[in-house]
Length: 260
Image (cartoon, rainbow, N blue to C red):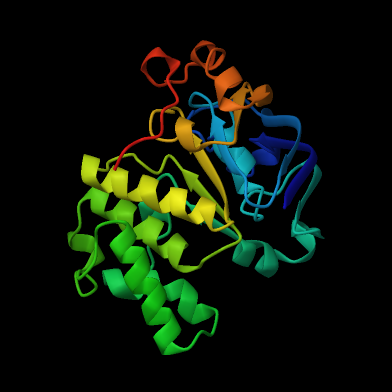
C-alpha cells in the first residue's frame, strides 16, 4: 500500500535549480507549489489512473511514491514504512517508468539494460534471464537483447524502459505517460501486460492525459488540477468531469475494455 498524508511539493525554492516542474512547464515562479496538500492511498492490487494536463502536478506526485521527489510537507509511506526511512525498500517495492526513457536507460544493450535491476537484486542468472525474456516479450522486443540502446527509435527506447520496470516485478508499478511514441501493436501489448499484472495482484498506477488506453482497466481515476485533487472517483463517474481538466477520454465516454 502507498499512503500519502498532506503531501506538498514546491519548486524553485532557495535557488536549488528546480525551476521546471516535473510535468514540463518551464520558467515557474520561485517557490511554485507543484503538489498542494494531497492525501491519497493506493491499496494493494488497485489499478489507479492519475490524470491531468501538463503542469497539473501528476508526475511530481507519483515521484514522491519512492523518494525521487522529497515532499516539503507531509509524509509518504510504502507498505507501512516511511519512504524517507528506507529508500531502498521503497524503490524495490515501487517500480517507476519515466516519461522520457532517456532518464532511466543505463546500459549499452537492450538485454543488459532490462537485466540491470534484477541483477542488482542479487537474483540467480536463471531467474534474471526469465524476467528479462518475459518483460521483453511483453513489449514486443523479444529476441532483441543484443541490440544497442543508442540505435533504437524513441518508441523502442520507451518499450525497453517499460520492460526494465516489469523485470523488477515490483509490488506497485508506476508508469508516466507509457504509451507516448508507441505504435499500435506495442500499445496493445503493454495494455495486455498491465491487465495481466493487475489480475495477478500488482497495483498499477498510470499517469496520463489520455485515458483511451486505460480507462476500462482502472478501478479509480484521480484527476489533478493546479496541484490539487479535483476528481477522485470510479471511472464511470470520473470521465464526465475529466474533459474540463484538459484530459482526453474515450469517445462517448465509453469504458469497454480494449481488445487485443
